[in-house]
Structure formats: C-alpha cells, structure tokens
Length: 481
Image (cartoon, rainbow, N blue to C red; front, side, top):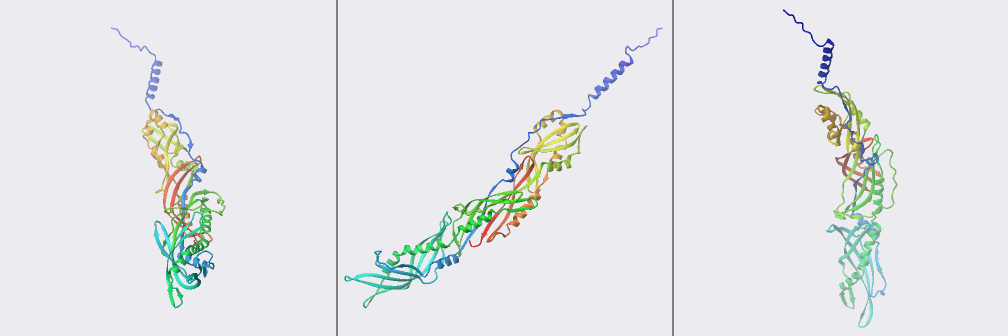
C-alpha cells in the first residue's frame, strides 16, 4: 500500500501576499475618502460703483399751488386805478373831443367763462365821464360839455408769460347807463347816446390798457417762485443715525392753465426736480436769483419719488451666512461634507457664493443667484439661486450625490438679509418732514408718502445696496401766492 503525502507547491509567504492583494482589491470597492474640488470660479465683476448707487437720481415733481383770490385781484386793481383814470384836453387828435374819466366807485371782479382750458374775469367799472365836444351849427362853431355816469363792462383773460410776468388781455364788452347825457340846443334837449358811443370807442384801447397795466405792475409771481425754488433746494436730513440726506435739484418748471374756481384763480406750478439720497455731511447748496422760463402743460404732474437706500457690506453679509452654515455637516449615504467658509462677491448683476468644504469633498464649490428686495419681509434674498454651471458640471462627473443633498436649500435659506430698518426709518423721517414743515419763512412743505415700491438690488465691490422707491405727492405752499 502506497501512502501519498500532499504537498503545496507554494510557500506560506505566497499566501500572505495573496491575502494582502485581496484586501487591497476590497478597499478599491469602497467609496473614496475625499474628492478634491477646484472648479473654475465665476469671474468677479460689478456694474456699479458705490458712488453711482448713492448718487442715483430720480425725476420728481414738487407742486406749488397757485391760488390767487379774486378779492386780491380786485384790491390791486382798485388800489392802482386812481380816481382820474384818463384825461384828454386837446382837440388836436382830430376827434373834436375832450374827455375826462374818473372812477366813480369800487371796481368789481367776478369769474368769467372758461373756454378751452382758459378762464376769464369779468370787471364792472363804475365811471363818471366829462366830455367837451366841438361841432358846427349853421356854419357856426360851438362847444358843449356833457356829464354822465356809466358802468363799463370788461372781460379780461389772465395769464402768466414764460418770463413769469402776469398779463391780462382786457376787452370792452359794453356799458350800462346810470345817468344819461342830454345835449341842450336852445329849447331842445337831444339824447346823444351816439356821441357817447363815439367817445367810448375812441378811448376804448386806453381804458383797456389802463386795466392791463395795473395788473402787470402789481401782481408778482416770479419772486414767489424763486423763493419756492430756493426752499426746495435745501437738503433735508432723512436719518441722523445713517447720516443720510434728501437732496433735491430743481431742473425745470411747468404750469397748468389758469382757471377760475369760485372766487379764486387757480393753477399748479410743478417744479421738476432730481431727488437723490446723499450720505455723510450735509450737502452744500447755493441759492439762485433766477429760475428757468415757464413751460405751460395741460396738467402739471404730481408724482414725487425718492430712492431709499439700505447698505449691507459683503463682510457683514458673509458673517450672517457663516453664523448659520459654517460648521454644518451634510450627509448623503456614505458621504459627508462640512462647510468651512463662505465668501460673497459680485458677478455682474448676480451674487456669487463660494463655499469651502471638507470631508468627502475638499475644496471650493460655487453658487449664483440674482438678489432682490422682498418688501413683505423687508429682506434681500436671492432669486434662481443654484450651483454655478461650472460647479454643477464638475459635481455631476465626480460627486453627483452632493447635487441631491440639502446643501443648496440650506444655503439659500441662510442667504436672506434683513435690511429693512434703514428703509423704514427713512420712510418715517420723510413722512415727518412732509407734515407741515416750515422750511423757510413763508414756505411750508407738505405731502404724503403713498407707496413703497422696490427698485432693485445693486452690487458694488464692497456692499449690497437695496433701493426702494418712496412715492407720493409733495407741495410747497408759499405765503402770498
């Protein structure tokens, strides 16, 4: 019987080597411990500078109501038309007529008709008239004197010229007898209404001019507009805490047509201005002595708009986000990363976010979103916030699991910045400013902020600016106008 002994042709060292290779092969089937992340970063760029944002100007209108009392017009006319209105003591003007015209009593001014956006005034002028006429009877030259009283009816259209002079265009409409003149020729008494008509018609232009000259000489508008213009120029402090000022720069003036309303002549002068928010020390301005020529408009606009600005530095925004997400871990299956840092910067009109990671991914990844102001929460947040395209492409090839994690949503939630406090404070200060504020002697500023509308969020190299429009109506009331 033969006994066989099995012998292995390999030594124990060989099997140890095989075991080591097996372990290595098993390790190759496990997840890698770390992926190095270095996708291309979005390019840092900005569309605006700090100065451009803080000096953005908005076209607005400050209304200056014009409310001229007909009693004041009446007073001015009566004060400047003296008792003797007209005198002609010569026959040399070929009309064979001398005349004196006196104001017999108070001139009355009442509203007239309104046609095609124009209004007129009616004037009743009580007159006493003396006429001396020269005529021939049977070849003999003789003179006669007549005395009578009439009430002359005039209509006048009131306007303000582009150079701010007040003008009226007066027209004689007719007259009513108070005492009728009678010419006596011996025993005969002859009515001479025709002679009176001739006399009035010959002196018609002089009477009309007397009324127009009195208005042009005594009703001033320009000095009040210059006063209002300089009052509007004054910088108004919006917030002492944030050292912000409302700066107004008038640029042009428009005016709606004059109209008679009840016992007043009314219109609206619209001072068109640029409004801007100035920061730091109170802006220095210089008063003007002249204003631009007046432009007539069918209707003066009345919208007043000012940009209210809230500034948040990138450093502060990064601190706010970092306090929320830095140190947080995000796990997906066998993978895990921890956020180590956050950096924010601008990519044109988008906010770029660089997030530092360690763990299954080591390095940086990038997100982008469009910042906007939410008026409900009074916060700046991001619209369409997502992985940057280069980062998404990199992760899709190397770490697709991260795209499915909670990291993006958590980061987007943290990218909400409450910036409403300066805006709310500025709104309150402006409304207080517009509550019967006497900005100069005889000049009162009144108005109301009616709505707050988001403008946009501006990115600069150092800050995020949220700008909203405060819209309303503002009026300057000037004593005497």
